[in-house]
Length: 174
Picture 1: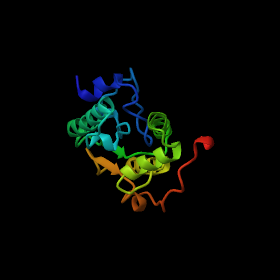
Picture 2 (picture 1 turned 60 degrees about the vertical axis):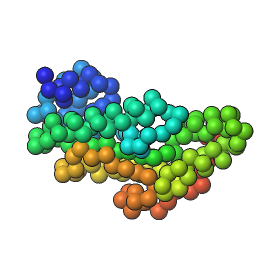
Picture 3 (picture 1 turned 45 degrees about the vertical axis):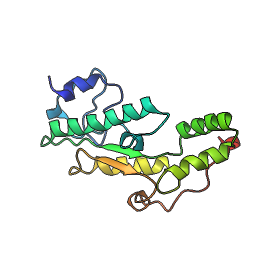
């Protein structure tokens, strides 16, 4: 049994992209029938180690490795498998992390968000629309395969057509 067939049981690994076949848990589609394949969103943590988030970092490293292995397995069959690896993004995981940091350190929510944004090489949070733009581009890209695409607030400004994000939200606005 091929890896692609076995992965039909993995929750959310494969998503519908373009007009291709949807493979979801239990669908068990053979790779010959899949037009395109997109791995779930990984993370910058899937490319570098990070303290205090060992399990998260390990899971994202595993997803990047799975992406590369599956890409090698289905190469030449009209299937592409890539991982999108954003840094800290303007999502609930950051807002919840900022609340935890604020509670444990006495800093404000806004200071905690700003500190996480500074950890991205671009010094800002990644916008969800930037991640979506890269995913949409991959739907129509049949040449990129087995890549871990980094969104760190620098080059993604040009690649995703963004001019930069505004100020991070306040705790009250969430």
